[in-house]
Length: 352
View 1: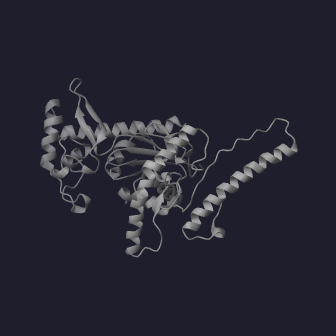
View 2: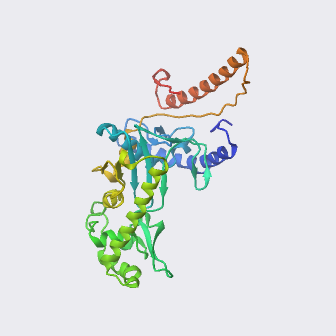
View 3: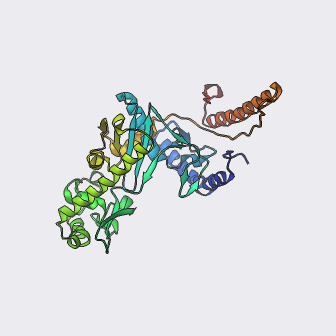
């Protein structure tokens, strides 16, 4: 078996299981999307964002490399926009409905984790370094029955927005309900008007679940929820930067994601960033990054070489030959991927 040939067999096994039960079944779905695009005139095959920061074809042999592709697109988009604006150090912050994702670009480059962990399983996949916390605009809001303190998440309304959407089937207040009550979200133009939000329904739920038990008005309760979320995100962002030995004053913060514009001020205030940038297309910024990413494949392989301290020239040459052989194997894999997509072998650029 030559899939994910990296050291640490348990990591490799986890990745192979992900490939078999998660990635491979999605191939047929991606094929249908690609076929649909071609019917509408697309001249190229569908490509998907990969963990290493490039895009790969849905025909790729190792499709598990497309896991968590959305947030990675935001990092790629930030890198490109940073180059245009002249920013080398960027704190990428992506807040949507379920999570808050943070990544750092330093001196124009982002870091890669060789063995990231997901759902408590370590994988043999190179992944753009990101840190996430379960907090977003869809996070459920609850009141602790003993301490009377507000608890956010970790579960979320996800695409169902909150109780403000009558068809959501939800009866637990979400952060988005607080946005609607305070007028931060236009109830008549959510999703371009496709979904109508019920302000009174959100008010009733906030009043019953949060405001009345705390002796607050609905508006004060909603504002308190948003302030608590902003504080949580701010502390997480600041700690993430400081833990890596950096000073926020050296960074420009890029804020994007569906909830980026309504929370940017709250979670960046007081952190001390050099500047804060909110793209006009914040909700689609990760998709923008995916579209800007290079078409590239990345393959890795672990090679064990035993070279003595005073090895002979022949032994050193043999070790070098083994490394060259491994490199050649990886080069063949990469070239095959591009040939499958109709490219010529001589047009492929190989970068060690």
